Image (cartoon, rainbow, N blue to C red):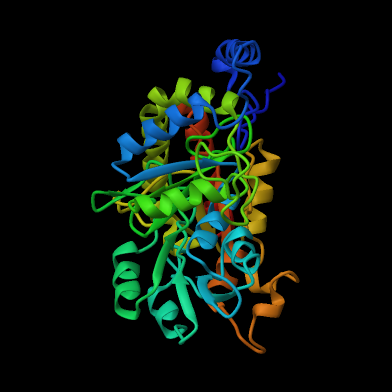
Amino acid sequence: MTVSPPAAVPFFPPDLFEADRAALIRLVREIGLDPEQRFILGRRTAALEELLRDDLGAADVVACSSGTSALSLVLRALDIGPGDEVIVPAFGCAPLAASVAGTGAVPVFADIRPDTLTMDPDHAEHLVTARTRVVMPAHMFSVMADMPRFTELARRHGLRLLEDSAVAQGGVLRGVPAGLWGEAGVYSFVQVKTCGMPGEGGVVVTRDAALGETVRMLRNHGQPAGRRFLHRAIGLNSRFDEIQAAFQLHRYAGFPARLARRAEIAAYYTERFTPLADRGVVPPPPDEDGRCFYVYTVLAAVRDALGAYLAERGVATHVYYPRPLPAHAAFAPYAPPGARWPRAEQAARRHLSLPVHHLLTDAQVEQVADLVCAFVHEHH
């Protein structure tokens, strides 16, 4: 008798938006045939900004072309430029450093905490100099950074606090939504994020209405809202698409349920993997506060072997950051000679992200957990 192999478990499913296909086609037609012929920064974008602003209790939400450009816009709005330093994590996505370097400022790399993989406030404070203008912690995978500590650090040293919350939309820490701890935060809407869409886009969120107004001007070539062909500053083309805005408005009511399903899956994984912590597979910290399961990431002593084991059995995994930011040629000029970031280097060698998207079935979740446990039992 032939035994069928277990069904494949994709990291992100190709049918992520299949349930909304009819609505998306309808919206494309509706906007394409609208006599207004407004395809960017129209009333749907304004409605999305208003929805998020009200939901978060923010002073302003400004939609832009990506989470990356959102970071760049805020740095420009804060007047960051040559001669300034911005403290960023040594472990994370390229825009953390690239957005700073793009202003002419210097990204200064801080090491991370070994448990949360987020920037270590103590190391960040050690790096503050007279040129430091901004500290920019980033939420990592499923865990929000220690924003109370960073808030106090910024206050103590007179720094601006910019929160890279691109992966953490829906996360809440001590009652404060991700993105609203600092002077501004950002969300990314790229399809794999918690509130993703079939395209590129993001928002700046802020409690500072004046900062939001400046970002709103800079995203559209430095033109004030409603004033075309009047350029008050050198801005960017970082405008939001009306079709995507309409699609986000359509799907937003289901966002809490999608987040809840991710959290349910993550809780099951953590329950199964906690006993493995002293056997080479360490789950994220179990605290539910400040969690938002964009992805679920373990630290594995033999990461590549675990990834290969899962792949051979149909489970897709992902390694996001195989090297720390200062180890990339693009950012090496900003790394002091001989400097090391040992915990970032260790995380780069050990992290492995598992499927946690909301379309996983209970059977698939159990399959992933069973295989991780089986690997540990076989290799320990």
